Amino acid sequence: MSADIAVLGAGMHPWGKWGRSFVEYGTVAARAALADAGVDWRDVQAVVGADTVRGGYPGHVAGATFARALGWQGARVTSVYAACASGAQAIGAARAQILAGLADVVLVVGADAAPKGFFAPAGGERPDDPDWLRFRVLGATNPAYFGLYARRRMALHGDTVDDFARVKVKNAALGALNPNARYRKAVTIEEVAASAVVADPLRLLDICATSDGAAALVLTSMDFARRHGAGDPVRIRAVSTVTPTFPRTVLDLPDIATDSAATVAPSPHSFRASIARAAYEEAGIGPEEVSLAEVYDLSTALELQWYEDLGLCGPGEGAKLVRDGMTSLTGRIPVNTSGGLASFGEAVPAQAIAQVCELTWQLRGVCGARQVEGARVGITANQGLFGHGSAVVAVR
Amino acid sequence: MVAGWFTDAQGQDFRLLGTRCAACSTVFFPREDAFCRNPGCAGGELTEVPLSRRGRVWSYTDARYRPPAPYVSDPHAEWEPYVLVAVELAAEHMVVLGQAAPGVGVTDLAVGMEVEVVAGVLDEDAGTTWTTWHWRPVGVAA
Image (cartoon, rainbow over all chains, first blue to last red; front, side, top):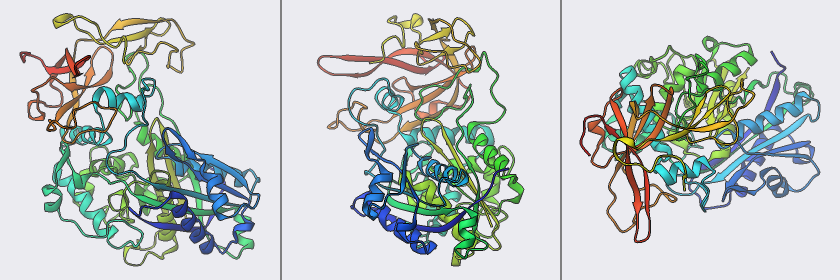
């Protein structure tokens, strides 16, 4: 079990399609997190930026871009890119610096201004890039992979499209209560069923949109938090950033094929399950102790998969969990109390940080109408393209 | 574009091509020519090997909207959805994604159904025809 660090401040820029620069969003979120922490920017010793990518390389190296926008003050600087796991890797880098004694106060920022429509790879002829290949050779978009997972759940576990829609209904109801969410309107099962099919069996309202957005955290050593007058802050106890193990047997974007499991026996646990296991193991906490979870609901069906991979229920029991209302706000284990990606949309480098903002506010008990009563332990889960696992455990 | 991913043959002789590590026998598709990715293998020579012609449907879906570039399609033509099939090859214990043969819809498929690989056309214009592989339910005529 490792040592804790404190979450002294959390902040966001509201998500949506605002038509401005990601630098502006990130700076708003950073200032909000600093104000929440009661820390002056000039006292921050390190800044970690989760990179936003344009054209296949980080067009702006995020750590320095945010540091410049806030005013150069000579802090240690780090920039990380891990696709959807960028935010968690930024938190992981900040935590390592704090636990190593390299810095007491670290600002973590992620922000993006997403293009409209399907995510697409960078231009040019790049057949050595799996992401380019899956589009060029197969036209396999992200929703195509979500459709494959959804259809397989239906065949293996008997999930129905109504079960998938129930996830959207739950998350939309929670998003309606969150001022930072892009979509703030309740949705019915009938409205999901009436939306257009994107990738059979998934419909438009089963799949998350792309958004602009930003999230930031002020992370500190426990000593600094105490000196700063925060005797009982929200603490981060684990950050999981694991890779898959060979052979990976679940077809995962952006790959066209899985590894062969003919010569080496596969792990009994899927990659997604191993992400959560690593976090639980590091935190010394089991799924039965979790008060709430924030998971990557890139699609409604994928949220059901996370229930099982996080150990919130047994294999194949995800649909029953949502059907029985167990993951709603008043259920046994509320999931995506923020409204999830269903309500926020994707702003890639900000997402994993935004999940930890929600845990922070829930563990502080300041979430108002979407508050989970008596929340003590929260876990986040997501996965970054090309094999970046990411989960964070926070406690109070 | 994807040189060496499948044979030039048509009909029954059309096969996907992978590579196999001489040291640990692990098979890779798309072909891995630089290094063996088995972490327990010190590495061996990678040689070309044809993959199983048949497998069983792991899952399937379709594309109801036109994918962005680099997928090639005529923006002036009405969009015609195509089906994607992920197929588990029994011998290789590997899932390979591909488009279904033209005319195969999602209602023609089921998880676990046996399919076979056939040659197909990804796209063609005045100067070029891009060939590819398609998955087709066994017993269905071309």
